[in-house]
Image (cartoon, rainbow, N blue to C red):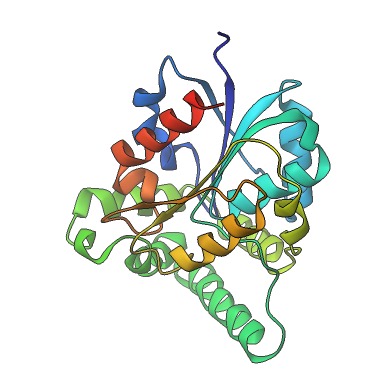
Length: 239
């Protein structure tokens, strides 16, 4: 059996470090490539970059913003994706009215902080809501997340925020998914709830069960890499 090529798509301000803790467990199960969004400022552009560099057929996994990018890959070229994993992500567009304005203001406040005091200062504030409450005393974990964000610039942060605020509704994409799909949520994720993942799973024709990672917040691959990798191995083995 051919070892699949697995493309891993990181989230907002994330890079290969977000996936790194779980990669050793995937050796022998998949050839893994982590993408870099570069200077892209829209989700479709990020998706097209992936397709331009990817082999003809591949497995695809996206975390957070990367999950939305993965859905845009599915919209553009579903015939090339052999299996799909969606982690800590969503599918709905920015809400209208007060809820949408609140999202804009919340994201702008973080961008303002990054521009005024530096990305590290922003990351130190932001990370408090990115991991499970029980991990807030885990200094090495928090520093790893902060350093990952710090490797990106405030300009990149602004570009990726623009991409997220302009995100399309991916409901129709989910309804057309015909490949084995893994949907995974952190039990303590305050950015992308378990209920949100359940709504996504119910749109997919196969209705995959949502895999909830106990003791994890939004950064599940860094918080609980063994649990995430275990779900990935079962997903890869079932394709």
